[in-house]
Image (cartoon, rainbow, N blue to C red; front, side, top):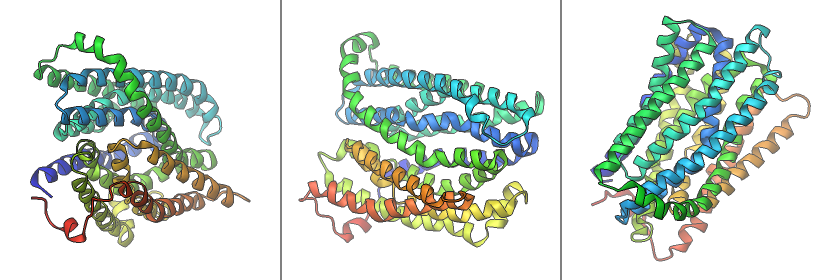
Length: 448
């Protein structure tokens, strides 16, 4: 790989590492300050903007694709219609999501097993979590803008601020104001507003540096861009619903069946295991804008890069997972202490295996989005959701055990992502490029 490409990958991974390190240090402090049960509520309430962000990721992906496409063609005047179109779609999704969450929070919380005294605070925490959607999703659109331009230093800065600012605000506030769940979620909302404003300023500065005249561009190009993005955004949003069901439903199922404390324990195991796939996803994400710009003029280079990403994904996935199978107790104890250690480790070992299989999914995902075929990812995620739901039904004949919920996830990841999908990509995408032959020697040698 070229030095320039390695730098892009490194910067993108840094955008994952910085938030991860902040979570690593913040979680133990939060558990100590607000307690296990309030921490479980914090995880559930804070999952709301994260979950809706999956739903809105179609808008972000559309932003990345079309910014990359028009930037490669030198059509910079299209940037503003793309951004405004994305913001319009995001505003619609965010508004509907907030309304639905406000109406359903009470019903959901009544089915959770936690102390009655926390109910009122939990409801307010969910409302505050809902309003974070406006600013988290909006900020991620601006992240997508800079990714499309392949300005990964800018996107990394904004992504890092979303998490780092949140936990700095929360921890300082808990020490200085009051250590309860309402203060925690309120400060998270304030930090998201703060990051949103900064990201707007960064995008405006970039647009002004290109000397673009905003109003004439908007009036002539906006309607066309709204229509062009609609199909892509709708398909990606459908995919995101499947992702939401597949990756986030476990928390709510576990919360419903086992209560807030177990959700907190699961969140610890999930936070560790999911980071393996997150590193791989972040490292391979450069394939998205690169394939958008090069698939027509140089498909061979895209295919070579894709294979390199697949091999690297498997290698680094195994490398990152090994310590958590060799000394999981030592790592978790060092992080959060010995509280609930046995349950967390038992969940972690199975989750880690599932995420190891998932390490093979990011490169095909980014490739399909980059070449403008998000329908392929829609099929993938709904196959996952169907298989996962089927396994849950199979295991729930008597009573659905905690470990059975997690094994259902791992079996699904192995079947779809490790076995089926690499074959689908070969047969469906690369079959269209019959003249683009790639030998193993092409994959292992460096780009010139």
